[in-house]
Structure formats: structure tokens, C-alpha cells
Image (cartoon, rainbow over all chains, first blue to last red; front, side, top):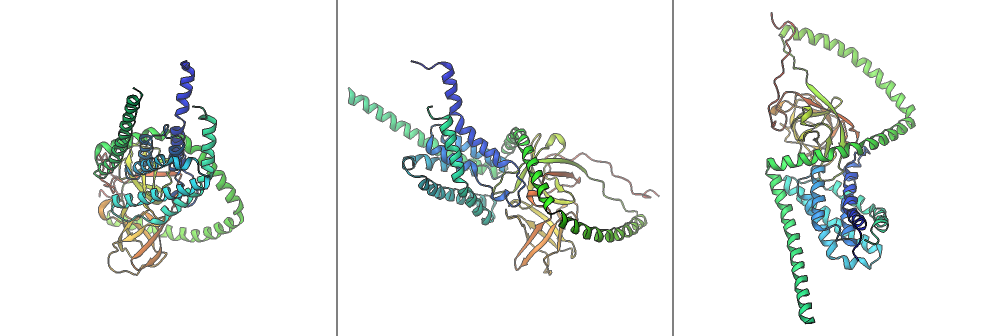
Length: 171
Length: 299
């Protein structure tokens, strides 16, 4: 039996959720908070979004979407074009190819793996920015941004998991 | 029959896997291509960036409003807590400033007399636009902000951006209705400056740290923490004397400057057109503006 048109529209809209949520995380990062010293170490929320969806719904957040979100993030953040695109693409690729390893494991393992992956991602970002601008970028904000991202991983994962349960359970 | 079918399915799966690998690798290649194209300052890339920026600006504009209100409430609570201290500080400052006012009045009189004697032509009053900060992508890889004014409002690349009297950065990208402010702390920001007291020239170079570095200091001056850093006229980028910050540490080889205005304090900024070349080449020439005549300049 073919599902009715409404069911298909419903499923189609629900399939946009991973992309929409990651995009919302990106926009959220861009809102000026005016908190002292926060701006240069704000957590990399889109990175967490891409990591989460690459593990749990790689069909709905494929590599090219990660690439697109990265390129958009480059434009909004003013980083050299292509840096975040490459970083998020590689994060998506790595997480999606290792997802079988994650799916059965505990949350702590997933956090630890995210730590490794995010460390690689920030390191790669730093290297790319340094090479592209021809000058060594200050490493300390990069390090604190990494710690901030790592610290925010559990609550954000909880929110993303709730979102997935609420909207994408059966589709 | 079944074996044949499963063979076909297997081949199809292999083919799909190959296609996926290929797509992934081409995306990686595309990212590197973007980096190279972006580095080469290609007009198309710049145009695309501006277009996307314009597209996203209205969303950020709406999002930044409640954020600004929340920040305001937090500020007010913080101010309320420190009211007594603040009052004492302001009283002391007021006393000091009243003294400075007397000095300034005397100097102003003296200055106007000297101007008249020299037939001095004053600099034209700069045109400026005040605009809101709508986007501040927290990033350790760059220090820039999105502003809610673009080329339609007369913003051009290279114009100075001021908060109050202080220089905070300059315009690096311009869209139709939005623009990007590159802060002096960004790794790509370089600016000719001088130390106010000794007139020593140097280059202020950001490195994504909150405190940019002084480089290429002319001569071998004695730089002390607390020295004021202002713009210099070299390179005809900005008018000389715009305040930037004070020297905070002056160890050998690494002089750090603390800007007067920090990134988190920016809500409204002024984009000022001094009619000079700016730090980046203008995409189009600024329209000529009539210069004012000096008082008594015609006799």
C-alpha cells in the first residue's frame, strides 16, 4: 500500500530536521552574546550537530550537507572559505564510517570519541587558518574553544537525542 | 538464478560504495579549491560571500534583538550591584575631568588663535553611519562581526569602524544590506599606528588574541605599559590620532596592546568615511565632498 500524500509530506518535513537543527545551531552561535571573553571561545555547536547526526542518521545529514553547513559557517564567521567546510566534511565522514562502533557503546565512549574527533577538527582548523593567513594564529583561544565544546557535549547531545526521539522515531 | 541475482546486488552495492567514496573525495577537493580561490581574491567568491551574507543578515538581525535585550537586563543588574562603587568612581573621575575641561578650553582658544594665524584649513568633518552589530560568530579562528548596513547605505570596503571615539576595526566585506567588520584583533588585521607620547611608529598586528601585538617598531624606543596607542597617518589609511588602546606588556620582542573597546562591548558602531583611501583599496572611488573653507582663509 502506498502511503498517502500527507504521510509522505510529513515524512519529508521530518527528514529535514537534522539539517534544520544543525543550521539553527550555526545561527545560534552567530548571535552576539556580549559576554566578556566568551566570543572567541564560544563552543562549536554545528560541529556537535554534524557529529551527532552522522552517527544516528547519516542518511539525513550526508557529506554534502555537512560541507554546505561548513561553507555557510565560513561565510558567517569570516574564516577563510573552505576551512570549516573541510573540517565538518571530515568529521561527518569519520563519524559516519565508524558509526557501527558507536551505536552499541555507552555515552562515555561516545564522549571520548567526540573528544578525539573534535581535537582533530580544531587542530586541523588551526593549521589551515595558519597556513592560509601565513601567520601563526594564537593557539590559546582554540584550546579553550575546544574545552568549551567538550564541556557542552553532554547537554547538547541530550537535546539532540530528545529531538530525534520526538520527531524522527518512526521515519 | 538466485546466485546471479545476489551477484548483481553485490555489484550494485560495490558500485554505490564507490560512488559514495568518489562523491566524498570530490567534496574534499572542492573544499581545497574553495580555499585556493578564496586566497586568490577572486571577485566571484567575494560576490558570493556578500550575497550569502545579505541573505542571512535578516535572520541574524531578528535573532540578535532578544539577545541584545537580555544582555541589557544583565548589564542593568550588574550595574545595580555596583552602584555605590560606581558612584564614588564617577565622582572622582568627574573632578579630574573638570580640571581637564579647563585645560581643554584654554588649549582650544590657543589652538583657534594659532589656526587663524596660520590660515590653517581644517580637516573636513567625516560622514558616518551608525549601525547595529547583528552577528558575532564566536570563533577562535577569526575575529569579525556582521553589521546591519551595506553598500546601499554607503558603506565601502576599508572604512574605519569606531565605537565612541575609539577605533575598533575596519570594513572587510560589503554586501547590499550587510557588511563585515574585521576587528583589530583578527589575524588578518594590520594597521599603521604610533605611540601617542613619543610618536614612535609601528604596525599593530592581530593574531586572534584579544590583545593584538605591536610589530616593526621604528627605532629603539623605551615602550612602557600604559603608553597610549593611536592611529598614524602612514599609508593614508586612517586619519592620525584615533585612539586604539594602551600597551599592557612590553617584554622583548612581544609588545601587547589592550584595546580600549573589547569585542563584547560592541552593540552599536559608527562606520566613518574619512575620505581617505582606507586600509583596503576602495571598490569604487568615494564621491568628492566639498571642503570647508578655513575661517579667514580668503583674505
